[in-house]
Image (cartoon, rainbow, N blue to C red; front, side, top):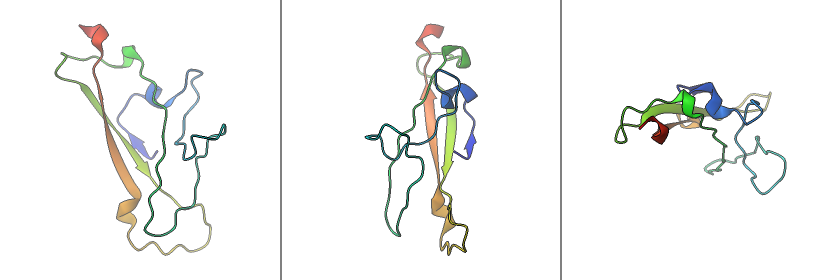
Length: 102
């Protein structure tokens, strides 16, 4: 994850440790690095932790909104020919309605 407007607790587990994307959810270990060949797409899951105290919904029709931005980077230390780096980033909107506020 490269940027966030969300509360820090969203990307922390119950022990307050940071979470990372998991490209292999069938494995016990978190697979947070992968190889992606040209013109291919890989999906990942990331656990999110919502702490009610971090969100204050004004009403049921107006969620609290924040954004998570994920950026793919190369672990290769050699020169990487990146033809179009604009497609290495995705922003995800997170809408939260805290029903305990009503």
